[in-house]
Image (cartoon, rainbow, N blue to C red):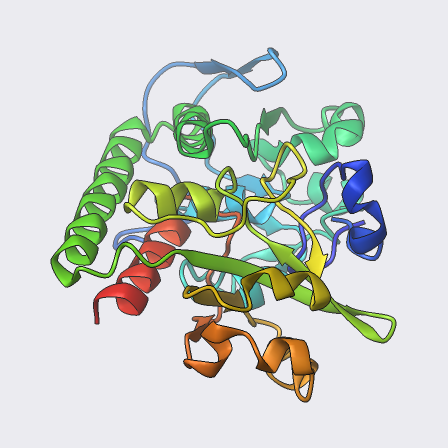
Amino acid sequence: MRLPNLKTFAVPAALAAVLAAAACGTTEDGQDSGGADTEAGPVSVTDFLGRTVELDAPAENVVALEWAEVEIVASLGVMPVGVADLEGYNTWVGGTVPLDDTVADVGTRSEPSVDAIAGLNADLVVMETDDEALIASIEEFVPVLVTEGSNETDNLARMQRDVDMIAELLGKTDEADALWADFEAKVADTKAAIEAAGTGDIPYLFADGWIEGDAVAIRPFGAGSLVGSLGTAAGLENAWTGETDGMWGLGGTDVEGMAQYTDTELKFINNNADGSDIFTTGVAGNAIWENLTFVKNGDVYELPAGTWTFGGPKSSEAILDYFAEVYAS
């Protein structure tokens, strides 16, 4: 099961009690609805599962079942014809890479409709390993590409591999090169801005959260998460040094666990795209929270809505922009 802002991941035993309730840029000019640049001849790629995916021609009508892949497809100049949980995408990702009104919803990310996918006459379906059990059913109608989605060891290199795989089957390798060059330039600009501001010695803590019973569950993003990898690339120190899940780079704690930061100067950044206000009204009146140094200093920041923390290069650029805003403005 996936919640809108909480990716599914394997949870270490030490985190299970805390995480039990959680299963877990604008598109480019000249973008065509469901169209890729025409190139003669077949295209093929080896996907994350080691499967050879071959198409007679670059895919023009693409369905994507996870939001990072939706973003990547759109960022490469192809408007998807189908997306799983379109409303959720618009809430959590669409502020950075919006979709147009031609895109069809094909069900939830955990249970997309094979019939809806088949009805779109797609050339390609892109999914992550979360959806692996669906491959056989979908491949009765359309080829399937499986990306990795996350890798706590090196999430930036993993993201580039995913982009390159998708681009190969869309005939968009030049666009992929430009997309990655823009991302690398953003990393360099962000790091330079923070260095110039002289604030990079202050660590950050990035988290989202939810209400679990009568308590607030907090999910910190460790150094191996995509957010953490971006922070490291920008020259920042991640304050979360606790255990993480091993795939997404995500930890788990609660308000009481935040007491370890009582006297720590840091910048706390949170995601509130769904308007749940966990780190304002959700913690209001909590003595531990209100005694934290970063809370008393007003160093609590809210990521702009529609910036996906598990996304592709454009979402990553938006996160870097916010790091620069927090640290260098």
